Length: 362
Image (tube, rainbow, N blue to C red; front, side, top):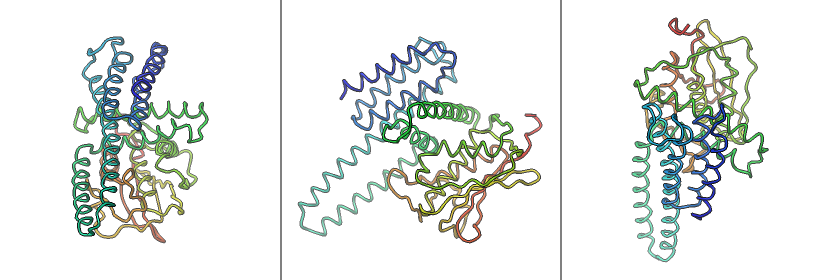
């Protein structure tokens, strides 16, 4: 297995060497290629193999893509942030798969042990102990990976879907989509760099965009989370323009779409439509789920999660960060994320953004 994946690493590295001088090649392309390699290796290999590929990929990205190219450990301050972000992402991916593999082995061992035991009391005690351990592990995991892991999860899932031959995508379509996702991932990392460097107060890339462009980009970026779900986008005025940072707005809308898919029945459609006011434009995600009762504002508090979900598997369960991140990103653009009950049952989450850029941007 080591020989196979190290060979695959050499193949990817030789490929990037052959294209590294192309004018359109970007750091995001290299990061994407090696992240896909790390994901694939982590699914089949152990922690040692995954971490080895993380380190080798980090060095390759630094060598081929970070100016000055073909040098190691000579990056600028901002480039170090990109490299460390890539290293942290690769490490989290490898650790996630290693943890899942370890948990699966532990679960199999415990299952065999329970089968050997005849005492129901001992079996219940073991289940209670396992539950406490898993809950504590979840709490620590949520505190560590926080919002970065939350927002990288869906792009990684989409990239995995595009890279999977069984998904049915034509190679040329998959490569084009992978390139688009790589560009969006690079833009997201760049935006997060600005937030991290200036505490969230950095100047955003606010521009005029059509609401339709924001919605369609979000649908593509969060395709993996919306698999087998019908999303109906209402017709809208093609002349409408909204003033926003496209990367952040796509993240917000993607979080709202993912919540709608999680908290509504799979057979019910998700509706997306736009409402224009004098100074703001609302992009609304509506579902036919159970709706929300009680203190709605608690939903926008970190680590809060509504429990009546149609999706509660270990790989898809919410960390309770999505709405908090969505509101933070929206308010950074002079907007907001709001909730209201949907007429006839269900929920509507509104991404409200201004129609005009601030004067200092204009």
